[in-house]
Structure formats: structure tokens, C-alpha cells
Length: 163
Image 1 (cartoon, helix red, strand yellow):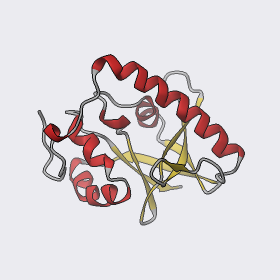
Image 2 (image 1 turned 180 degrees about the vertical axis):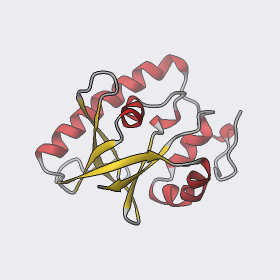
Image 3 (image 1 turned 45 degrees about the vertical axis):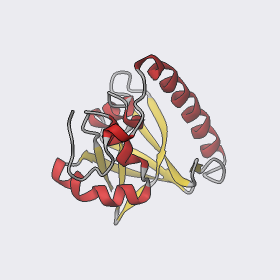
Image 4 (image 1 turned 135 degrees about the vertical axis):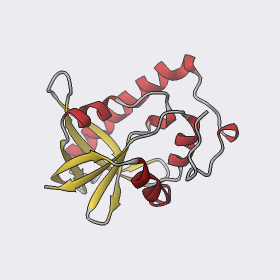
């Protein structure tokens, strides 16, 4: 079991995602995201612009690492100074989400916030940067701490700069 000094949640205090449920969870996440993206984009960010709990969202457009097709995902909007942060948490599941691989292969992305789309260049932050950013990330979305505690995977964080 891997522990990170900056993660306050203890693994023994959270419920793991059982392997038999991973497929169902991933299916639901994919369906909910596709619906959320469609409504958000059609309404230019006026509808379905918050996750449960009131957390604001953004739509991230990537290019498929294998297919080259345009892919869109609804993620929590995580502004940080002049950048945007993206956390490839996938609820603390054992592997990175597909969109993580798309961004690594094609770091030029579009992010839509409040109906406005801008182009960014994404890079995975170092472990030291992630540790420094962690308090800010959990201040915006506290569940990130639980997600990191749930998995041995070092959840990647991207810093996205406007280009």
C-alpha cells in the first residue's frame, strides 16, 4: 500500500470499489459523461454545469490517442491562477481514465468553461508540484483526497496553460 504524506484520508477509513462493480461504475460514468457533455455544450454551459454537490464543471476536448477522433469529457473545473488543473482520478479506480492517455499523446486540448472554449497545452505535473497543489485541489473538491487514498496509483494531475 502506497501512502502520500499530503493525503489526509486513510485507506482503512474508505470503502473500496469492488472489482466486480468496476465495469458497472465505468459504464455509468461513460453514459453520464456523454449526456452531461451533450447538454452542457448545447446550452453553452447554462445547463448541467455542476456535478452533484454543486461543483462547477468544464468540458475538456481531447484527440484520441489511438483513433485521432475528438473526445469530450466533463470534469470538475479546477482553476489555479492563470492555469487550469485536471485530475485523472476516476474515483480512485486502479487505472487511469482513457482521457489521461489521450492528453499524454496529444497535449493540445480545448477547455470549455461558462460556454467559452479556449485552447490549452497540458503537462503532467511532477510529484513535488502535485504535493504543493494538493491543498488547493482538495479545497475545490474534497473527494480527491479519498480517491488518492483508495488507490496505489499515483493519480496524475495536469497543469494546462493557455496557448
